[in-house]
Length: 505
Ligand SMILES: [Zn+2]
Image (cartoon, rainbow, N blue to C red; front, side, top):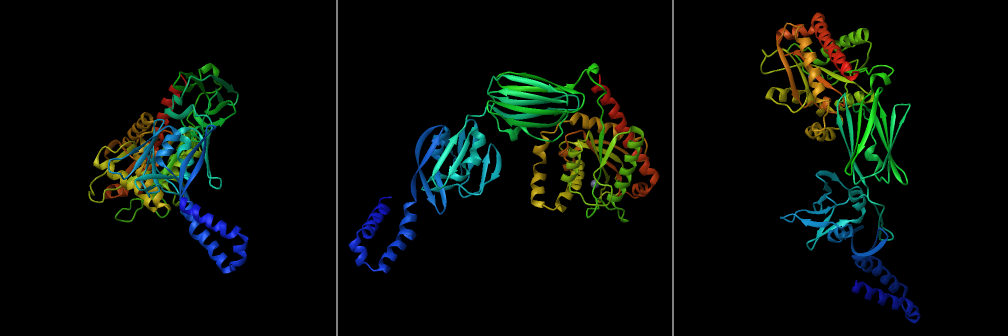
């Protein structure tokens, strides 16, 4: 600072002192101008005060410029937001802890861990003389949500503005199954609530004095009784709009920590018609460039399962009069995520994925089995899981999908409908097994990607083994395919009637 200030004064004297300017040659002046812009100016911007406007107060803090990036000291930021700066023991990372949240930085690394989840940012933190520095520019993205205030950096004015009142509606949890859906809003309460029910099957919840980030409370995925949810921040209140499935109603309760909205079927007298499971998604596995399992004689899983799925579709439409959506009805490749997306878009009530089994090393293995989504419990279940998930590697954005594959386990922790999926698996398995002359391998659980993104009861059927010579012959026969299809149909029918009865009590 002082050095550059002196240089600036010298330059100023040279330029302003007319007699000197007149006597100095233009080359000499150019030299000093060059010196100013290319040496003195950058040096000057190494350290500068930055004005922080925090909730109306102005605080002056030390900033640093490296290249084109403005940094502030981690310790200063912790002080501004009322948090603490914590070093890990080995000095390889540092964290800012604020309002129960933790943001972990690794110097020179674009990844930042925010409350346990890793996120990449365009600029990295750095270390200088043992002092952790954070780029001003990423503060907003990192801390906005955590401290519930708007954080904006104005580089040209070298000013950081932090404003807005803290959020008091902090997040949402969904729980439930087909019979009951619960939405739990975490609040710093108590808050006054107002509920309105509209004709169109909507429930509007207005939270007086509520402050939230609307996108956190907005999603269009079907979840139990919920078709979708929309959050809106108004001047003096927060509003959440719940779109409900036909025949459901909501009840709102709250205390100082949470607001619970419970959706259950309306009592019979209020309903025009019973609640029904109306949309069934059938998912013939594999397709296109992904043949699935291939028998020694070249029979492909993708062809067999499509034929079976078409038969199930006909039975369901003809006898149960339900809407059936196929994830594919010809030989095309559909990524696993695309299959779950179809289920989501059509607001599926049930999801049934159809496959053929394989055991290349043990050709005598055979039988029919049905899976629902959970953590694989046995080596066999893990092997089937690995085979059916392997298609993720064929998908177009492998990086993304491998990452997704790794997160299956964490996703599964949020899986609801586990009970219902296992019931559906039981019913379908029982009905298939009693119709076909092969071993009943029972129901099983594993982490199938295609099931993990469904918000409805979902199962995966492994009809028979393509690697078993006898079963390979059977799988090609129309009669066997019809028996399997009939079994799947009967299982779905049973499940539908049991659940509809419970829903419409
Ligand atoms: Zn398969």
